[in-house]
Length: 295
Image 1 (spheres, rainbow, N blue to C red):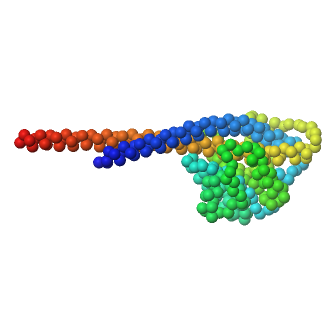
Image 2: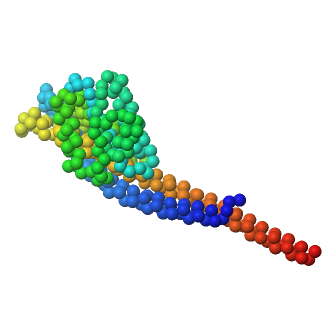
Image 3: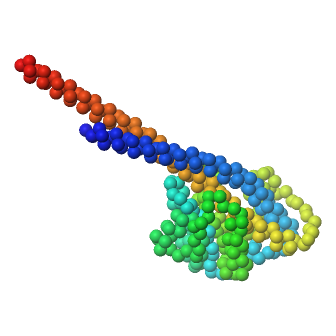
């Protein structure tokens, strides 16, 4: 039978841990709500921008743009979005697994991969594996601003247009709902002509032809809209990754709190049994002493 003092100390320690996990769960819930509202606010703009680019590309006919052509470079770029902090379940592990699989598939195809790692967890994991990282960003906070993501997108577009890389992919945790997040590798360069068809199909507008009168010329419009679309798609990936991270941490901390409650109940039962056993043993000693005196 376990010592009662040991059980009391263990139960007290678990209660303190439960306070911490419960607090972290509440913080993650509050942060999730804020980032979720932000993601909802930016997604319609991103989808409509993609639809507009798709319509203009189709209406412009033979007009081409460097961001829509595929260079012949034997190197690609991969942006991996992970978290700076842990305690979020399998969030980082799932994203990094997808990233490693993508890198290996690119190498099997004879292409090198420039890895742009976002987040301390991803940087430390790749260092542990001994895999090279082109750039590691550790100082991005939980509320990334568009001004922080824009230079990354501009640098990748410059490398793509100059023919240094042939494609740009993003490995991140795509947010679908509060109950479903999927690790995804998304291609953002080269841009496809049907960039906004998926969103249009969801809205019921797929296949609707649109006629435009261009002013200025289509080339000038695409020069402005296509880079803006790439920047917005990359920014949307960061926003969805942050939302998914908060959901994962919220779920993980709730599971930890529930596990602490179960452990407290189990320790309380063990303590009660030990206490009852101790009382019973004392009563038996008293009865035995009385019987000895009477005898």
